[in-house]
Length: 424
Image 1 (tube, helix red, strand yellow):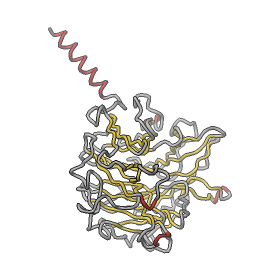
Image 2 (image 1 turned 30 degrees about the vertical axis):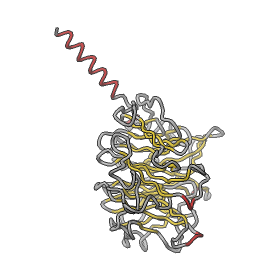
Image 3 (image 1 turned 45 degrees about the vertical axis):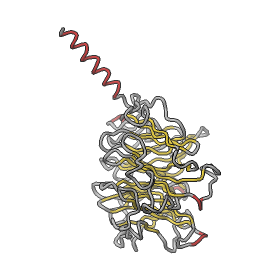
Image 4 (image 1 turned 90 degrees about the horizontal axis):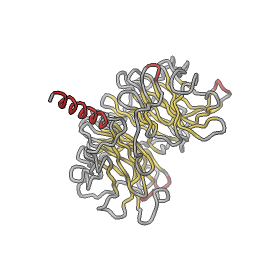
């Protein structure tokens, strides 16, 4: 009898181990781990995802834009007709149709319909369940009329309607002689929001900070802003180190030490917006490539819990196909050559077009591949994390549950999206 009990316990333990395998579908989510969202209540709604976040209660917020799929594709729809998509899903994967906005979509108010024009690029979920979105508003009644696009930040309450206590009726618009093009980077720190803006017709990255009420912080940087001289044309990003409030801004710019050749760059600032001159020698650290690698622009960046920095870029190796690269920087601004699988180059690599996502244990994802954060194995591919089968469609964004580490992949296919949740 005792041997039978031991066998049963062994089998139960083995089955539990299988169910916890990294990358395995979480069958408590959607149907078998996946929820397919074609918005059946709105026949012509095409939804295109750009960013996502998981709230503390396990709900998932996806932002991007809504387009008319009865007459257009996601790429040829008129920008002036695109509406902001802020869509929330319950922890079981189904839309939060009765608890968030109108039919699960963020809206102006309960009687407005889903009619906020523009599109979202980044999203932050706050501790009270509110949602902040950075993006773009196309022309219209903005400060530049029909001729200009402008950067914008929206804030929604936890119930999915614009928070009228934030900015002007829930919206902060960035208008100045710099003529912002769009807001493509967003980070929260100590109740404030750090926003990265593409300005001067997509030739300059500017950073500004907002108070919790949406007003611009006049004490940040010089005249309430940091002008970085970073070129945003091939992507840029902003991250904040939670413990100190340090800010890094990434993109590309001419390297004065390499005959002004344009290279990926990381610039680091104190929480007040002043540049940290000891970082990389003058506050900036360039990556010139190594062993034939040529990187384009650091379009994603994140702080690991130790303060080390992970910067990610598309690039090419010699004459071969493009790849996605990740470079690790120390707190002094020097990239660490022991990182990743490319000896002496400090690179972790994956397929082109890969999505970079830092995880809560300081490991990270490139598409469906996890890379380890562990001593001498830092940046090495994790052979035990396998997502099978891979989700349907084009991967656009990933997010991680801050409590249990579960990962949600959001893919796009023919006007609809798939949300797939896997175990960490």
